[in-house]
Image (cartoon, rainbow, N blue to C red; front, side, top):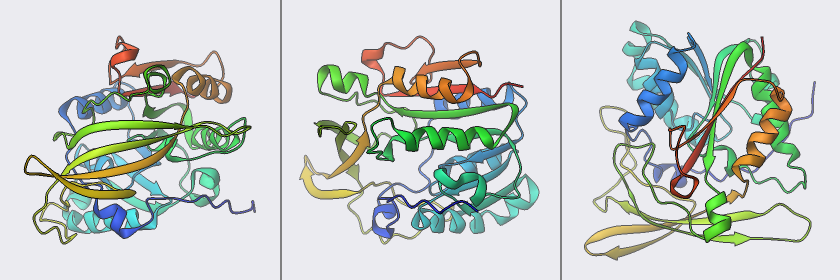
Length: 298
C-alpha cells in the first residue's frame, strides 16, 4: 500500500465553504459545453475529481449520468452529502451519485473498486489551488497520472485553470463570468509571488458581491446556499452593496506549460484541444479560464 500523501486544503473549513456559493447555478454556456463534450463521446460514467459541494455532479445527475464525486475537503463533501440527501428521489429515478473523500495524489488507492470512467472532470479552477513547491511540479504530474489511471481507453479528461499568461504579461487577471449564471465578482486584482528556486504563485483578490442579509449557512429547498466565497476575507460596503474581499493563492502556470505536462503524461500524439472561456478561437488577452480536453489513447 502506498504512503498517504497529505496536502493542505484551504477549502476544508466550514466557514470558507459557506462563502463559496455552494450550489450556485452554472451558466447556460458552461452547461451546454459540458454536455456537448460528454455526449459527443458517448460518456455515461463520470468521475468529478474536484466535486467540491456538488454543483457539477448534481447537474450531471439531472442529465442522466452516473457520477462519482470526490474531493479532499471534508467540509465541502459535507455540503455535497446534504445536497444529495435533498435530491434522493432524483438519484433513485434518474441516475446514481456517489460521494467519496479522495486525494488527487492517491486517487487510485482512495477510489479502489470503482474501476475506470468514461470521463474525469477537474473543473472550476480547482487544479491550480494545489500549491506545488517542487521545481518540476511533480505533484501536478502525479495528479495527471492518477487522472489518466481512472480513465477507460478513449476516455477524456476535462480540466481547467485561470489564465495566468495574462497575469504575467499585464499584471491583471481577466474578470469575466464564465461558469455561473449570476456574476458575483465586482473586481479582481493579483500579486505575483516569487521565491528563488521555487515555482511562482499568484495571490488573486476578488471583490465579491455577497448577500448581506442574515446568511445562516443553511441550504434552501433546492439544496443551495447563498452565494459567497472565501479563504481570507474582509467585508466592506461599496455603493450599498456588500463587497467581500477574498484572497486565494494559486499556482502560476502558463497554458502552454500546463498543456505540455498533460501531453507528457497522456502522450504527445494523443487527441487534445485547448479552449479559452469554452471557445476554440478565444483571444488569450480576453480569456479568463483555459479548458483542456485530452483523450486517453485506446
